[in-house]
Each structure stands twice: as C-alpha cells, then as structure tokens.
Image 1 (tube, rainbow, N blue to C red):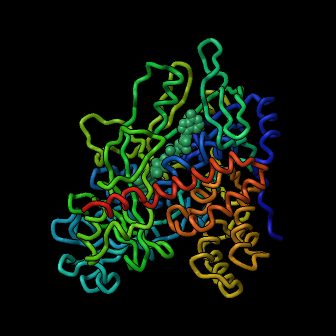
Image 2: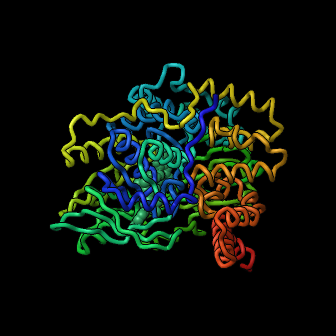
Length: 548
Ligand code: FAD
C-alpha cells in the first residue's frame, strides 16, 4: 500500500502557532535554506524539540539559486582542498542513496583545450584523485576521450579548440526541492517548521538568548517563542541576524554573486553537461535539463540589496561570451535568454583572497549571548554541516548519547529502494500515462512515488496543474503563488512560459484555498508579474531593443 504524505499545510497555521507558544524548544533554527533544513532534520532525529522559522519561503535564498549539482568540486583540487573534496565526494553518494529520485547521476564532459585550466595529464590526475577521494565505483570512474570521441559526443564544441577530453560522473539535483524534502522529513520527525515567519528580535535572560520574537507574514501576528538554544543558518543574511543580537558584531562574510542563464534547447542544442573554461581562467557549467540548457556561473563580490538580487546585463554578457567562445553558436544572443537566476554565496572572509579563491568551507561562530552561527559551505555538504552543528548543540544542552542518524536515513516518506527502481517506475509511467516526457520526468523527479497522487484523476493539463498545486498546498506549505511557481515546480527557471500562462489560475486557486480577499489577490498578481519580468530579463531586453 502507498504510504500517505504527512499533511503540512498553512491552513493549520493557527493551531501550529498555538502549539509553538506552549512549547519550550531545545533548538530554534533561523533560516529555511538547505543548511537550516539539514540541522532541523538531524536534531529532530536525535530527539530534540526543534523549531525552524524562515522569513520568506523555504529555499527562497541561495538554496534555490545554485548550479543544482551535488558534487565534490573538482576545481577545489587546484587549491589543494583535499579535505573539502573528500567530504563533498562522500556526501554525494550519501545524498543519492538517501533520496535517489532527486539526486541523479550526471555524466560530465571536461574538454581539454590549449591553455585551459587543466591539460590531459593534470585533468586525469585530478579526476583520478577525485574519484578515489569520493570512493566512486569503478564502473563510474573517469574515461579519457580522444578529440573525435569528444566531438562525436558533443558536436557543438568548437572543433579547432578541442584537443581531447574526459568523461566523469557527478550528481544533479533540484536544490529547492531537496531543501523542501529535508524540511518535510524534519517535520515528520516532530520539528515545527514555519515559512513566511521572520525573526525580528531575541529575548534574553541574564544576557543569554532564551527566546525569539518574530513577525508572521501570514497571520500578521507578532509572536514570542521560548527556546534553550538558537542556531542562525541565515546564509547571506547571517550578518543581519548577528546585528539583531549585537549591533556591534563584526562581519564574517564575503558575499559573492553567481548567475545562471537559461536557453531553449533548440537554440542551444547541447547533448551533455559540460564543464568548460571561460576566457578568463574560470570554469563554467553548461547543463541540459528537459527542454532547456542552463549555463553559469559568475563569481563577483556583492554588496547591494540582499532582498533584490538580479542578473545584470554585465552578468549576461559574461556568460554569453563564455558560451559563445566555446560552443559553435554564432547567432545566440540576449534575445534567446528565456530565463535567469542570481544567488549569493555566503563565503567566510579570507584576507587577501579574491571571490574565486575563497574556500567553500563552513565555519561555526558562537556569540557572547550563545547565538550559534553557521556559514559558508555548500549544498552538497549540508548533512555533514548539520552533524557538526547538532553535535555542538548536544554538548551545550548536556545531552548524552546523541548519535547522528542521517547517514542512512531515507529522506522521502515513500522512498525508492534504489536508483534502478526509480528508473523502472519512470519507464512504467511513460507507458501508462499520456504526457510529454519532459513533464513526466519533472513530476517523478520532483515528487518520487507521490507523483501518483498528482497523476491520478488528471484527465487534462489543467487538472494536472490543479492536482499538483493541491498536493503542494496540502503537503508542502505553499502559501504564496511564488512558493509554487519558483520553489516547488522550478517553472520560473526552467519553464517560464508555463509560469506566465498559468499564473492567474494558480493565484485564483490559492486565493480560494485560503479565502484571500481581492487586495491580497492584486498584491500577489503584481509580485508574480514582477518576478517573471525579472527572471526573463524583461527590462534588459527592452533596453536592448531600444538601443539605437
Ligand atoms: P540560504 O539558502 O540563503 O538560506 C538562508 C535562509 O535564511 C534564507 O532562505 C533566508 O530567507 C532566511 N533568513 C534570513 N534572515 C532571516 C530572518 N531574520 N528570519 C528568518 N529567516 C531568515 N553548492 C553545491 O553544493 N552545488 C552547487 O552546484 C552549487 N552551486 C552554487 C551556485 C551559485 C551561483 C551559488 C550562489 C551557490 C552555489 N552553491 C552550490 C552553494 C550553495 O547553494 C549554498 O552553500 C547553500 O545553498 C547555502 O544554503 P544556506 O541554507 O546556508 O543559505
């Protein structure tokens, strides 16, 4: 029998808040990105009473703006970061085992070019070390390819540049959905997780934090809750949370921006994921995904508004130039950019180092008042980061025997036994359900076996959409239409035309579900339009058209 997903709906918000007010939590986590989500799951599995609050939506910060790879970070070998590569490499395999429908194996091509980052010798050596550090199974280890083999696999590569190449393996994911599945698993294990709830202040007893004050964006209430410890996992916002605790606190972060741009596959018909040299010595990815191909990323110091992060014309020029330098796409231009996303890396400051050289390691800081802050790190390392934080929390709470249980924990409530079962399930669906492969693939990769709950009784495209939305309203805490269009489905990135086409239907359905008034509908409509315009570079394209 199919196991049912836990109800996790903002319709139950009042009751959840009432329960939260009566509870003294062992641990409160600020921030519902992958870092906070991982800590909530680890701590709840170890039996702690856990609260997590997120000011916007889960994964609305950096955790929906990454390159969406679960990887060891080959380029860090150049910086001799063996420990980081080893840990990320091992974590790749654990993430795949623990939620295989969301963390898929992905073949990656590394072309060898004149004056590139790697030559064939250094690349083979680096990837051999990489495969060994990450304990990659022998059948998935790197293969050296001749020039012709590379061009057969990827005819879009510029022939005159390519000398040879390497095929190696990585994993691909949907970062926002991974975050959400980890949040859902934490909630299933007793954690109380709220989106649209912002930390505004702390409550102190004898100069130690013993509570939080927050603003609920849904009920519009101000709420005070009790807790023994607080961890800030606020990503790029950790400095502003630290300032709430101590207005003189010093910044530990160096923020850098990274953008990705998305093209229709017909304009950038790439067959394989490629890790390629830009013209300035950096490495970029180009990754096919259903009907689109995305490329990125940049890495530039950022000091502007953290709540309005955009891809600029300079960012687009950089990625386009890098793509056109490497691939034979003479007509590709800004007109072909379907969509973009921009995110901020919360890196730990390192004196004298530029954005690309700074280590991606995580670090933990503790303030005088007991606020624990975790920053830095990568999506890939979320489980290990959480283990380190919860070990520390356990020792602060003087809890004995708090063994970390996440290494062999199936994150989804109804998991596939292994990747083969996932592939078989997908094959079976494609023979029994009349849907384009791209839609079916997205549903099964996003929801695992819960795709059945969406596919059942969906006689046409509109019914399918409403069933998916209802699933997310009932089981994934969707409140704002952008929660659905951006973080649950990824349409804002990978299918922006669908987001545009169905925005009104989605808004009206959500309004009916929550009995929202016309003012709220108008506000949501404007916010959705603004985000679609920003992601599809509406302003930049208009400027381009108007330039004489
Ligand atoms: P965030 O996801 O930003 O979460 C912090 C959350 O805190 C936010 O949602 C925010 O709204 C919330 N918050 C802030 N203030 C408050 C408050 N006062 N009250 C309540 N909530 C608050 N890593 C990989 O492993 N693989 C990759 O392919 C990869 N690619 C990347 C590409 C780019 C361009 C970038 C920028 C990063 C990439 N990374 C990658 C790194 C990875 O994305 C980040 O390390 C990770 O997402 C950070 O997660 P986080 O939870 O720490 O921060």
